[in-house]
Image (cartoon, rainbow, N blue to C red; front, side, top):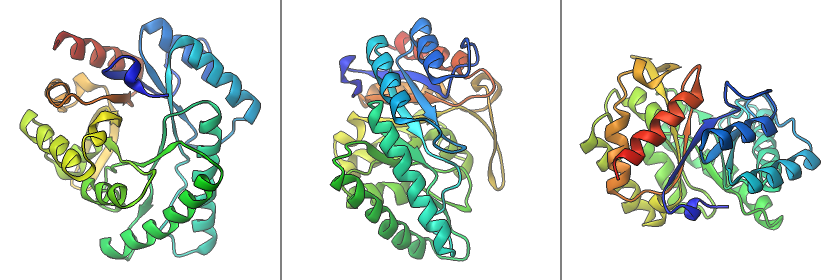
Length: 282
């Protein structure tokens, strides 16, 4: 599934909307469609607890409702752990997410790849690339077409700068970055103006070509942050994040793909706000 059916950006929520009838993925898809939104991220943050049968029926419902799905892998991933068992389990969690996501027709899956721990960024990059390549080799053998999208992270202790993920994506087939603009703002204390957003998008295009902007996986939320980066997610109007200027930059550079809103607590309220603001720019 791709967002090309609208030739624009699709907006939706990271997880089941607050106002859905129940916490099930199916109820979430129904609510997304009712709200007139275009996508939803299935959250496997505490483990991949969906059966293959349910995944297939979720995919059928999403196709009927014209809702594009992505997935977020478990939080317990650290491809840079010093413990081999933790690395093994991290790879398994990414594989589990990709396999179930493929069954419901997801276009990409995202996850937080690692912590630096006591390693340098260069050492961490090499380690992650090696382990992620092993994951990609397995998925390619299985014929799994889901894009693997490590996320731009919000704290300096985490692997996942914009530069790291663009380099990883340019060097590996089937890998593309999940650009969390709110995390990048929290991490750098900058990246919060039209000019800076344009610079980020141009950096993506320079490294990944036009397709880097043509099928984006974007995360967005209000965010509170301090000296050590991200503290917590907020509603967009309660934060300093200039989402209007970001939407203008995305429009200017003709970005396509999905914008997954992770604001708290009423994520669908901000997803609708983003979609309406974007459409008013036409």
